[in-house]
Amino acid sequence: MGSLEQQFHQAMAVIYETAKAECQYNATYFLQMLAEYGGVETAKRLLSTEKPSEGFTKLWECERLDLTVEAHVINDEFSSLFTTEECNIARARLLEYGHTL
Image 1: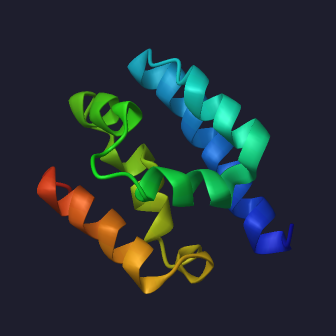
Image 2 (image 1 turned 135 degrees about the horizontal axis):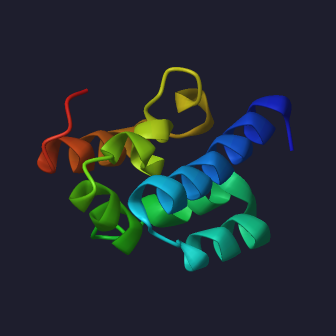
Image 3 (image 1 turned 60 degrees about the vertical axis):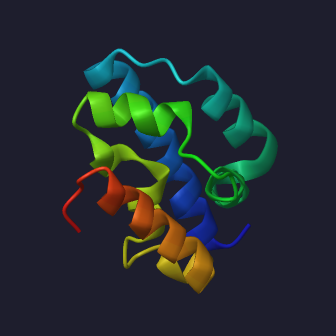
């Protein structure tokens, strides 16, 4: 795992901790995915689904879309880890739910 991939993985772990602390959302399945696949592959798997994850919806309800995997995927710091299509999916989901980019 390269340095940028490690940084992204760490950012995903921070998402989990922050969502748990601020939104009382214990994203157990997300944490399991992180442990099994790592941050980048977890993000790619979540982006490959037709609908946003349960975690995305919970973070939307908590008004913290900035904590979503999607927000991190399109972050300039990490977007090079993902395809244009994956970034477009992430961007579209955020816009659909009213997140300002």
